[in-house]
Image 1: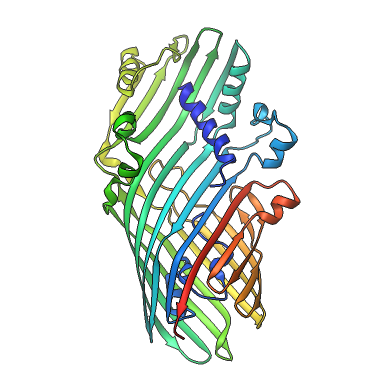
Image 2 (image 1 turned 90 degrees about the vertical axis):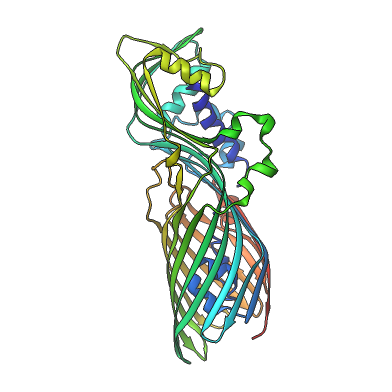
Length: 445
């Protein structure tokens, strides 16, 4: 148990330095409409700037947490020893990576179509209890230490990767010199990679640390552990060959969107959009193991956790033999729900050289469920200077986990590079680190 908890803290600390969201906040509301815009809202494929849009590559890497900033560590190298002392609520961390491969969009009169390829990866800590973290750190500094843990919510450490192949279709319902109305859909084949979840719920326990042993007493709770069984044998697990399970489709997803545009001089004056994203799920392969552990250790009875050793099967047998744990397997439940969200935006262009956009996203799935992927609630305000093919934008985001951040980026034609947090990183302590970049080409008018 202690090793699993220490793994949780290790993931938190190492991710803090790794700079690792799938949406391209800031650039996705660009004045120039390309495949990035169509993936934000599939109805935008009807508004492509060029008749043919080809996205060669794009990537977005982001990390958000609610505890530490890089400046905290620079100011106090020993801050990790007291990392949980001043934390009032659950610890959260979100790392999201998106790599958009070749993508093509075609506009035909009232109809538009597109194909996309994208690889995504996530590593999250969801509602980690700070009292548990404090007890682990305190136990490493003291030979004799006792703590009482009460964790009613389900706290998770979760990591996954998958690939999407999207087929977009859109149609203009109304199109005049003054306004237009469009609808669109993105139908996605989901190709799962690897999925790992460690979830603890309804934990009540007294943990006793001493120089020679670690004891649990008066303890109840449940644990979910889901993982790829190939991870148990390092010799047979080849990351390049095995991680993506042969790129076999094992799920379906869909995004739906609607878009309204008010025009002035045949150019967009006001652009509104609404989309429901990531509906669907993917089933992991036969190698996925899904285990449930229940614990019941009466008061004045003790279970020694530091004696647990060996393979997963050997440790499980030791738990069962103690009489304090029950273990059940249900591999058929390894069906992962996508991070469903509802998003809306408005783009306002009062002058030819200026645009301002407001983008909002709300999660509509329960991220505390062991088989739901997470997505963040957020609001992004982005003013933009437009000088022909050159755009300078500054996204300001209120993020569910990291709070307020401000960034800067630029776009020249189909090339863009920027960050949603670089300004606040320079000005003050910042709990977000990210970067995005991409390049696309357009042909025709």
